[in-house]
Image (cartoon, rainbow, N blue to C red; front, side, top):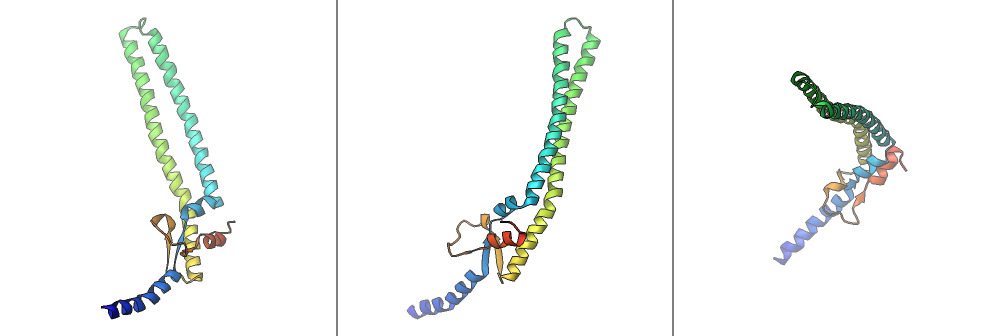
Amino acid sequence: MFKKIVLFILVMFPVIAFAQEKIAYVNIADVYVSMPEYKLMQDSLQKSADEFQVELKSMSDEYTKKLSDYVAQQDSLNESIKQRRAQEIDEIRQRAVNFQDTAAQKQDELQQKLIAPIQDKLQKAINDVGKENNFLYIANAQAFLYASPTAVDATPLVKKKLGIQ
């Protein structure tokens, strides 16, 4: 039994040592937020969101004004005018809800459009670092529950490849 354990250790030691040298990890979130393209994307998304907010506020103000006018005048209006104004108010509310849904969808589409080239650039940098350093694998640091202090952190190498300080 002792011979089997010793044999197992002798066989596994080089494999483990080899694997530790050839596997690295990268903190993708850290690299993303460091990329100037990511900051430009965030600015573009914020600008778009602000534009949508201005329009939504305008619709909300219109709804509030129509509703307050309706409430103030409802006792003096005949039934057909009340129904028409109530329908107008409901249409404004529905337009605002539809606009909000459309705006969220447009924001998602814009984010996907803007992030794709950033992801491609990051993936290319990771691939290049992997090839240049003969890594077998480069894993995302967030996927690990534990990483040894001796594990290779490729984050600085990827940042250097991207020209990020």
